[in-house]
Figure 1 (cartoon, one colour):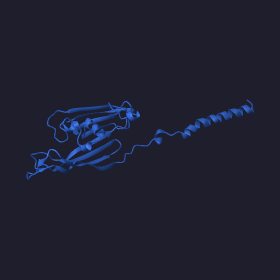
Figure 2: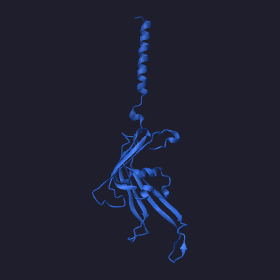
Figure 3: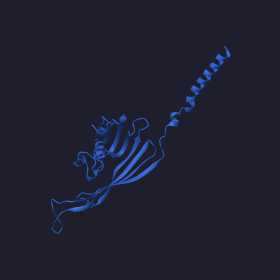
Figure 4: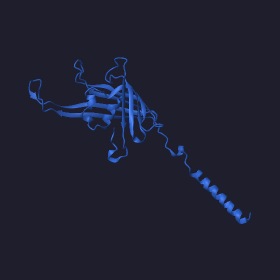
Length: 230
């Protein structure tokens, strides 16, 4: 092999070595290139208040002196103190006391604002291996349909949605539930087993209520139609 050929072979070998070695220096391992989940424990406190002034033109009523008047009043319909937090990216919790108007005719507190528990649950998050927003909950928590509807109903401050106002469903109950988001934001499913007596009453028997709600979003990236749900 002459000197020119030896030089060409050495140059080709060196070039091949550089070509193979260069990616090794620039390659980023998944651990180094990804942001680790935040496992710092945290607690947050928030408040939600539904307050209003109501004037009723018809029908008129009579006051204690027998005068015909138009009922009107300032009112606090609901007040929530939301305590939320997480112990790690796996485990989170929520505790929400509910302040509401006592309306029991036989109660000495009739007409008073009373304090009760609306939500108190622990949540196990499955974001590490399922689509973001997938979890399991245990405790007194939101029910599938009412929670979903209140998330898209713009007038919750005026009152409850129809299904809850008429007593068909409750917004909260004691139980165990799970939620799964579909990949690509194509929908979700929420299923749970509950006492069935709502959060405002104790369990009265050995029966349980099963609830499920599923939603499909056929065009999650469809511009004006991305909010379409089936």
